[in-house]
Structures are given as structure tokens and as C-alpha cells.
Amino acid sequence: MRVVVWVLSVAAFGGRCGRVHLLDVSRERGANASDVATTGASNPLLDMTGLPRFEAIEPAHVQPGMAEVVASLREGFLAFQEELRARQGNYSYADVVEALERLKFPLDYSWGVVSHLTKVNDSEPLRAARKTSQPEVDSLYVELRQSRPVY
Image (cartoon, rainbow, N blue to C red; front, side, top):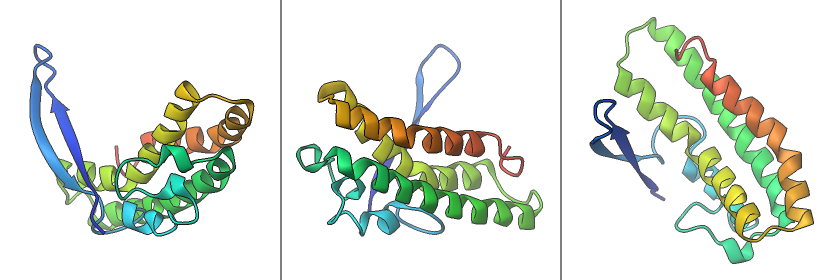
């Protein structure tokens, strides 16, 4: 399976858009779309093979799906940090940014779907499911942004 993401670089000067990159998130190491999407048949929240299957996603899918995505990303990110330490600064900006995009894609995709659903099809069970997953997702985003080997 191949999942491709468009990454838009925005230039700081004048607010003009910079380069647009195609990024194949299904290759190389760690948590990636192909790892997580294999369980999409049993949990439509984890199906990242195309457009989100909004009509099939139920509140009961949110907590187990997000727990799986978070665990997979955390494992992949730990390996990525070890790789950076082992390379002792011998890597480029592109090496780090593209790898982070591949690692984060399943979390960004799945959490984006949950967030969208709570805005357009809100219900008490969906809010409760999102609230249950929110602390773990927030904690992982903080870990990603405060990594010494990455930054």
C-alpha cells in the first residue's frame, strides 16, 4: 500500500507559498500509514487508504484506534531518536523533517478525522470517546515537540 501526502512549505517572507513536496509516508521506519492501516478493516478510523470512511466510524472506534496509533508512533519515534543519536549530528534537515512527517502521519490523520467528526456530527458518546483519548494524544504531541535529539 502507498499513501502520499502533500507537504506545503510556506515561506516566512511575504506569506507567499514555497515549494510543494510529495512525501511517501508508507516507506522506511517506524509508525507509518501501512503499519496502522492494516487494521482498518476492523476499525475504519485506522483505514488510511483513501478518504476517511466517516459514515462507518463509530464512537466505539475512537479510543482503541487512537491507542493503537499512539503506541505505534511512540515506538517508531523512540527508534527514530536512537537513530539520530547514533548518527551524531550527521543528518540533514530534510532527513529529519521527512522522517517526522512519515512518523506523525497516522496520528495527524486519525486525530484529524476524530476532530472533524466532533465538529460536524457531534454526540455525547463521541465527545466522551474523544475526551478519553485527548490526554494521550496531547502528551505524545508534547513528546514529539520537546525531543532533544530532534531539536
